[in-house]
Each structure stands twice: as C-alpha cells, then as structure tokens.
Amino acid sequence: MNRLSFNLATMLTFGAFAALVLNAMFGPLAALTFMACGAFLLVSNVHQSLDSLQRWWPVLILPAWCILTALWSQYPANSFRYGLQLTFTLVVAIAITGRISTATLMRMMFVVYGIGVIASILFGRTGTGGAWLGVFGSKNAFAAHIAVFMLIAVAVAADRYSPWFLRALGLVGAAASGPLLALAQSAGAILMVAPCLAIILLTLLTTRLSGMQKLFLAVMLAIGLAAMALLVIVAGDTLMAEVLEGSGKDATLTGRTDLWATGLGYIAERPFQGLGYRSFWVVGFAPAEELWAMFDVPSGAGFNFHNTYISNAVEIGLFGLGLQILIIYGGALAMGAYTFFRPNAPNALLLALQMLMILRSFIEVEVFFEFSIRSIMGVATLIYAGQGIFALRAQAPSQTKPRPRGLLSHVRVPARPRSLPHANL
Image 1 (cartoon, rainbow, N blue to C red):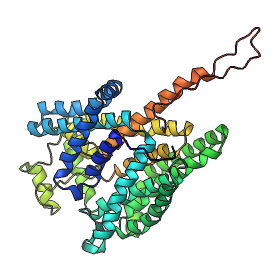
Image 2: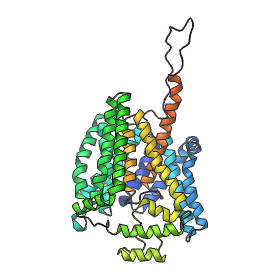
Image 3: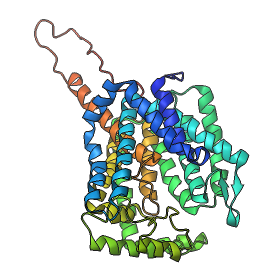
Image 4: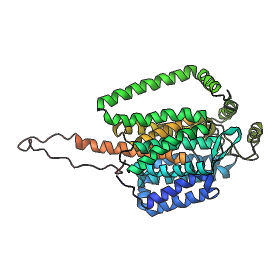
C-alpha cells in the first residue's frame, strides 16, 4: 500500500493502544478507554471476532488458568477479577489480529508512540539524579518507551511500502531516539535495544539475498547465538558484574538479586500452582509489606520481583509460567521462521519487539497482566506468525503441482494466486 487507510477497526485499535501506551497522560481513564474501544472492536464485526477466537482459543488457556487459581488463592477475589480482565485483554488482542494487518499496526504504533515522544520533549521533566523522565513516572518507563519507539521508527523508515512522508518522519524519529535514550540514563535499555535493531537491519538485508544465502546467514546467526548463550551460562555473572561496574550501577541490580532469592523461596514452597494470580503484592499481606519496607517503597505501590519468570511463577506456578513461555518464545520462533520466508519491515519489527520483551523479561515484569500493551503485542506476534505460516503452507501445494502430461503438456497455465490473510502481512 502506498497510502494510509483508515477504517473503524484501525480507529478503535488506535484508541485502545493510545490508552495503554500513554496511560500516564490518560490517568484513571486509560483502562476505561481501552475497555470501551476493545468492546466496540469486538462487536463491530461479531462474525470476524468469533472466527478469530475460534481459531486461536488456545491462547485463552493462560487467563483461564489465572482465573482457576482463585480456588486456592489467598486473595480469591483479586485472582478472579484480574483474571477476567486479563481474559478481556487477550480477547481484544486476538480480535485485533483478525482485523488489522501488520503494516497498519506498525504505522499506527509509530503514531501512538510518537505522541508520547513529542509530549515528553515538550512537557517532560527531570527526575532525581538528572535522568529524564518525560511524561512518564520513572526513567525506566521513559527508557522503555523510547526503546520501542526507536525500533518502530527504524522499521517505518526502512519500509518501502510506507508513504514517503511517513518514512521521512521515521528517519527523524530514529535520529531523535538515540539522544533521548541517553538522557534516560538507562544502560540496560541501551544494551537491549542494540541487538533488536540488528534484527531489523539484518532482516531487511536478506531481501537482497538468495534462498541459499539467507539459509547460510541463518545458520551463522544460530551458531553465534548458541556461542553467546554458552558464554552467558559459563561466565554470565562475571560479565554482568563488569558491565554494571563499567556503567556505575549497583552489582546487585539495586537489590534485585535479593528480591529474586525471596521469590525463589516462595516458588519452592508451591511450585506447581503458585499462591494465586495477583495475590502476592497485596496491601496487608505480611511478606509483601516486608519487601515494600525493605526497599523503601510505599505500601501498595505496585512493586514486583523484577524478573518475569520468578514473579509470575510465584503467583501462577510453574504450569502457568510454562503457558507464558510458550507464548513468548513460541511467538519469537514462529515469527523468526515466517520472517525468514517473508522478510519485510512489519515482520522484522514484530520479531524485534518480541526479542526486546525476552531480553527485558530477565530484569522486568511486563507480561502477562491486564491492560498491558506488551501482553497484547506478545500474543499478537504469535498469532500473526501463525497466520503467515499457515498461509505459506496453503500456497505450497499450488506451487508444486505436477505439470499435466499428454497433448496439452506444452501449454503453461498460470496458477491462480492465493492471497494472504492480510494484504500487507
């Protein structure tokens, strides 16, 4: 497409995303706006919504398990209520993938995140220590926003199917993201965004390579990743200590290692079922109150274990964590495979964002909970990849049909093209 297309589904998705991404600006209305836009999206095309849910219902096993934990949760009302909200959030994510193409999603996210960047430049403020907070509540939130915007801006700038003016804005956004990320003083965000940028650039580079050249590059990357993983396993603690020392950070990640030890203790007590979804960080629960006091955080301030796997396993157990890992890493692997065969800017962006989620999952908790843009994107990436792979498999038989023999064997009949689920997928 060489022009932007606006329809009801796009407008409703834009409103839902804006409410979540710019929640610091929406305030208490953020959740209400998301629910209103999400509900209208579902009912605006009931047939399509039901079809998408029928195809991708296994994704809803995760929120169903979260609701089920209310049976043994120490705060069953919390587990049930937040489980229902997570269910609604993921239902909206599934509906979006049936109504919005990846190209439209990429351009829409560029606008939404761009609004946050512009607002931060015009009305932002500086926090303690001189770190820039923008319009967000902390430097980490601002750094995470800029990191995602940088990836989106680079993808939009490199997308040859986007309008020229949008590509120009993408170049401006990518150039501005570097200084803004530096102002946030987040060494972690800078380190994590670099390999994700490399994913986008390498993916777009493969559009100029032959099939065998792409396969060779993929094998070399797999070998490199395996070597890096082995290095992290063998000498990860030493490398992390040196990086933190070089960047002037606390060797305990500002006390996170103590948090992790505490979380692992609770996992050992109830490994399979956990304590109950959203039932640990509750005002009045003694262990949570102790940790809030230990880290000088106000009671009920929304603290967490700063590790997705530990934090979520404490509440929904190893079974629930396994479901989340299937979505996160399954989405990354599926999108990686699909991008190998269909290397374009939207696919590269989704793969890069999923990789950023994986990298951040070891020090932050971004998924899975209600009204979370990262939770929506994690599920959407898995589904978009699945849709693309199924479409490729459907195309394969038509491309490998044997030629008819006999009198008409010399006649070449062109196969009827099959369209992908989305024109821009």
